[in-house]
Image (tube, rainbow, N blue to C red):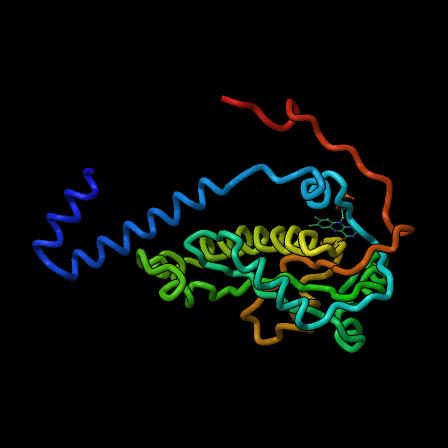
Length: 232
Ligand SMILES: Cc1cc2nc3c(=O)[nH]c(=O)nc-3n(C[C@H](O)[C@H](O)[C@H](O)COP(=O)(O)O)c2cc1C
């Protein structure tokens, strides 16, 4: 009722305001519809994403196509980041040539994992991510907060690219792939081999493919709620 009265008032004053009001109301309705649609996922889905999802250390010789990689990105790109800043950059390494370039930077135990994976992803971040803020976040001038503050920019880039990397893992699992993250590598060597111009920096690596079940290690325990959390 309130809404109808307001629409009536605006429609009498200015057609442009009225149009904007309608757009805003439509967006509000879409948001409400979305909230109504949110529901608990079933156990099959929860198991695949969480309880039965395992870190994989070796993979079967199955390939992932460029189209499937694009599909993965199209899911993962919706990850939320501060100011919608999206600092992560992804290098999807499929070829032997690319893997050979990566190998000298890996700790020895990670070499066979990379060799067998369909794809090894370098999750990096763009140190100049703020260049995109004017188009990606139009509500305020967020770029000004980071362009002259390298410390804040570094914190931002690490935090948000790590989140995007976690979304990459969940996205891969949601699409039915197995994966295993790796921080056992020399970041300076990866940066030199893949980002010699210095703008992008490696955060961590992730193998994606189809699990070789022989290469799944025994499940480690998890800390109990009381050890890590409190409700206040
Ligand atoms: C950021 C990150 C870095 C990791 N680095 C390595 C690594 O370098 N080599 C390795 O074999 N496993 C690595 N792991 C795998 C972890 O040891 C594994 O995820 C953890 O033990 C839990 O195993 P689960 O997922 O099977 O329960 C890493 C995992 C994460 C998330």
